[in-house]
Length: 113
Length: 112
Image (cartoon, rainbow over all chains, first blue to last red):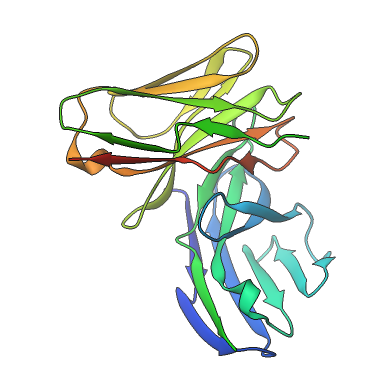
């Protein structure tokens, strides 16, 4: 059965700390891996990773995919209170037109001032 | 450009009733997917539509159904509501399968 596992499930840090969020996946027809940030409403798109070893970066956030070991990490440096959210990773199954997403349970990140 | 729009934002229903939720994708996006999010199960795939055809379906009972119209807008229907159907229902759209899916704010459904 396809699955995506994220760790840790919960993380509490202080402003300025650096965090690493983990995502492992087992999807039969893997196409890509997506990271989303969810606060109170819609998950908002962060990164889409399709190739191994190529780091994607956006400000203080960066992410990389390892297709051999079937995992991805999301790094956040110099964390701020506004980074507090649930971070979701999703593996995309290429076996459909749009790409069915298999989501992990998410990592609840809390950043204290 | 406008994002994915879902209506209504909140719904309260009682067991046995039925409900219809609506989703308007980002302009130009022809693919729409629906997900159910609950604290216990996380985000789970319901179904996917492209060009008015259901292309993929998740592991949900037949009480959950959907459709897509020629303008790419989509609706999902849940009949004979059960307490366990209480959840946030999210719709996502994408231009193609190689592009990321973008989510609407969801419809929060509560069953009393």
